Length: 302
Image 1 (cartoon, rainbow, N blue to C red):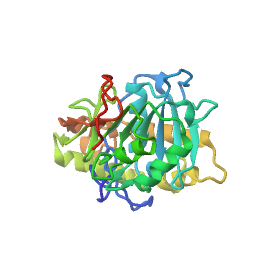
Image 2: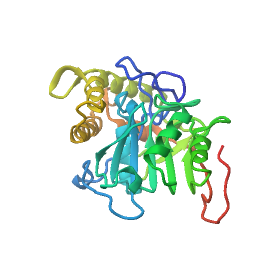
Image 3: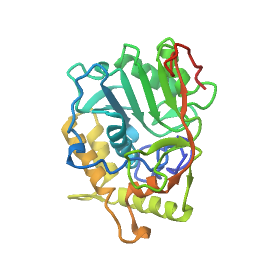
Image 4: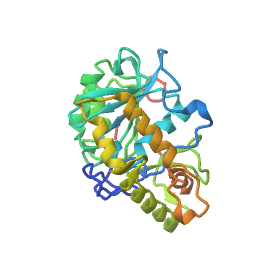
């Protein structure tokens, strides 16, 4: 994520209701998920139990906007992710849903959803994140995909820092060198959408209007809790004291349902998938690691 209010390619500010929303990875632009076909994709429908199991890590900026929830659903729809974990700002990791008994170490393939910027992922520095993941997942992961803007930017990039924490042994890492976004190329769906950098919007004015609508709804009342916003409900759910993974999973399901409601008037839309639809073009994320292409040759991380 960069250092701007929550807009595509912007950096995350502290988790407050005043935070602007960024689209996608932090700076991730807001457009992330697709209509995952049918009931089978409800949160918690799948449970990972295979050797190549994959898991998603969301962070405290989950509470800043719907982006991380849609990233999670995108990873489920396109990459077989079946478990979700929360990493708090202090580096502790807790299961949300679908987790194997062994916890995060059971998953050699990881996806990370957060806003990012220069030496920043959610509200942690790159060093802090790398150290926290190494503690939570001592064995070297096979792959780590960052739905995080600017993960590959700068001499101390997140890609370099994390790979270095594992003695440069991670086979494959993916991350954007600049702002990144889920790109639907005209399709309001997560299925088939791709995370790209240098994305443009097919209608800038409409895109900004929908972002404004989503931000306003996020600051408004959470369903069934008059006077409490999505931000406030979320912040209460991720706290260590009294943590209830099922309650957080239910919150994420509600966010997914509430922010993909179709709108007759595009100017009134709060549908995150409309942002995905308006994101077009772009280039693939950077790829690096000990053997990112399977040819036995390492590729240095940017």
